[in-house]
Length: 271
Image (cartoon, rainbow, N blue to C red):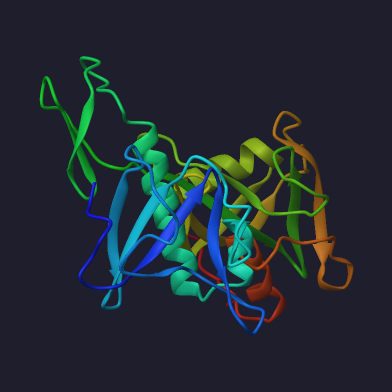
């Protein structure tokens, strides 16, 4: 818990479940509340967490019990949608805040002895009985764009909302490298083999606590045999016949856009 009355102003990332409190701006846009005091009244049990600063500006995050619906100055908006209305730095800081709140909610009691946990630092808790210390954990996942000639492999997973197609993705398992995970997920979900795996980029994915690591690769062999427990449908698509694709917030879209714009270099040597 930090003091809710500060000497210096801060960004206040106020969440209710997965919705973020935003301030309506005169020009019709939205902003994160900023000031020395919380923008709404907090209860005694609402723990305020300190985040790393954004530049030189302090950042705080707190979860409230009920959404703010009776004040025309504010709007509650789903975190993913805030990507469209907030600068990248504020969107990413909001995501970090959401991850801290998720971690806080899921580490109330010690996994060793069951006693209550207490904040020890901004990003750690310590058991009040046995001293066990814990930190926020990341779930690392890979996502890969597979090329075959002038086409790419696109799939629609059962867990995707909407009708758009994405890319093969999956969580990294204990004891495997990122590249091994790429090979395994592509084989498990589609039945094909790939080569020339190359790193593209990474992205925090706070839904609820992920790190997406993007790759691109080239097709080698095999017929598509979709893992029906994971994949509803999929296939090879050219630039001229793409299905609906993910929004720009996602690593999948970043990879697809890079391919569409010719920014993925050809690789001749097999990794």
